[in-house]
Amino acid sequence: MSIEHESSSIRGPPSTAVVEQSQSDESIRGHQPRCQRRDFMTDSIGPKDHAEAVALFRAQVIGELLLCERTSHGELAEAIRQLAARPVRAPGALVARCFSPPTIQRWYYAYRQGGLAALHPKSRSTGNGQALTDAERELLLAVRRDHPRVSASLILRTLETTGKLRPGILSRQTLRRLFRSEGLDRQTLKQHDAQPRRRWEAQAPNALWHTDVCHGPALTAGKRSVPLRVHALLDDHSRYVVAIQACPTERESEMLALTVKALRLHGAPDMIYADNGPTYVGDALSTVCGRLGIGLLHAKPYDPQARGKMERFWRTLREQCLDHVGTLGSHHDVQVRLLAWLDRHYHVTPHSSLMGKTPAESFEAAPRKPIDEALLREALVAHGRRRIRRDGTVQIAGKEFEVEQGFLAGRLVAIGRSLLTPTEAPWVEHEDQRLVLKPVDAKANAKVRRLNRTARGIDAVPFDPPTALLHQATGKNAGDP
Image (cartoon, rainbow, N blue to C red):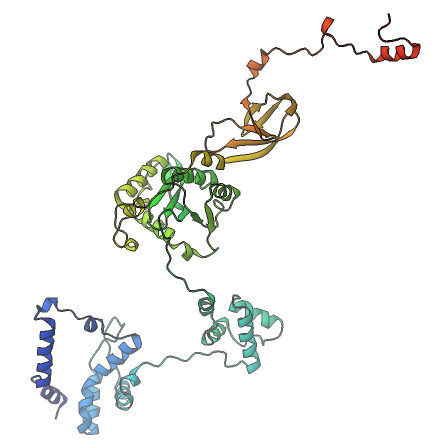
């Protein structure tokens, strides 16, 4: 009997059990149209990996040979030759090819003996330092356990230099495979040492603000290329952007100005969460937060996942706004587009982490704590030490000021000035008093009348040391003629 005839005889009408099962499935599905029938289990069934896909392919190739159990060896060999002449396309291959009769015969007998598992491709064995002695192997593993962050090349070079390992006995790739087989590779050690990361969120709006700087595309101002830095403050609970500003630099003063703007609009948060960049690790931010009663928290260095919410916002901002502003020439043009994108899109779009709510709905529904303007002013007072010149003048921020109190001339005094209102005059703090400084007006000072402290005439106070000594020597009284 030929293979084609035997395979065609197998295909016939379905059995009663199959028909009953089909009818049962129809009743379960509720007789839905065929185009709407979707079963999660059947849709997701497939090879779990490439090895199982290759085994299934080989089983399909030799499927016709399984019908040759009752045939002679000659008929089996003829069937194998027929299959070897048919081109088939293996999983992952771009073109079809023919497999040799010995290969198909090996697949056939492997399947007869071990089933589908016997058709899985065998992984190629690679060396893991087979030339190493037991002592050398244990030494390499011990060094790796004690120094998990050291590279394999450095371990190999150091042991060869010190004579504890024979030179050229294994390569860096072989050493890495050895560490990987023992579970001592860098990735495995990093996962074992790391603490499990959990999703977290602030309890309410204004409980925690994220602050960061994003590097945008350079702007073209005439023939010059101007950098773009976007400062932003993001509320953790609602994902609402409380303030955003396009700037040419990422200085501390620009960050403080944006923070003051957010405080005036939305009140003070309980805590500010920043990274370890130079903009946020200085004394200015920590001093202002401490005076306002705001906690300041810095993320762990070299851990970008800890700043995932802010990084995700930067990604959305780049894709939807910043990637399309490269042709602009001023930061003002970028700023108005940032505000329009926030108001018209980001704040009014349902957020996946807010259960369908928009950031504006989640943020505006919470109560706010208004900031006291006097407290904010005191928090942004900068202090310094300056020496008053002999003429009663002192230079502050490139400007000349003078004091009216002449006794301060030549003294080292404490100077204070408000960063909240830079136009306000600085002052001298002396004995719990604030002595206001005024700008030097040289022309007005030229018209000021000087006081002559040498009194003459009837108002003069008698003071003549030589005459007093003469009267003492001659025995005369001071009042005698």
